[in-house]
Amino acid sequence: MYEHRSEPLLPRAKFVRRLGAHALAAGGVVSVSLIIGTLGYHSLGREAWVDAFLNAAMLLGGVGQVGEVAGNSGKLFAALFALYSGLVLIAVTTLLFTPVLHRILHRVHLEDPDTGPEAGG
Image (cartoon, rainbow, N blue to C red):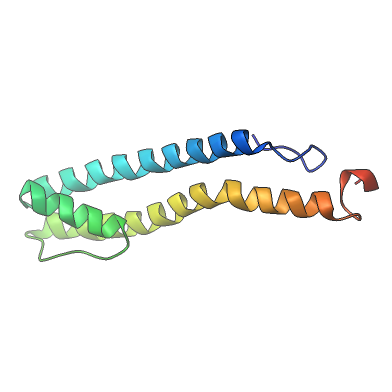
């Protein structure tokens, strides 16, 4: 998926496309998670659609839940969705930063005479 350290640095236009693909994947993960959270809060937590969407969005954004959740099934869903949201936050952050970090490391390896392609290694 990514170029090897012996290959040249990816041209800027292709790198921007790579960033776009990662952003699209991250947006898909967030969108699906937001739908799952909204449906769960609405059906299990017995919240209105707007409140369910608000709770799901706040948890996925790392802020936290707003208001009280009704019933044991709603509270159980809220707890599990909070744990899931933490993992989604880490995954989306990773998806967005991976191409940038790879490009920085690739550039460092190209400039380092001990590990660059001209050193044979």
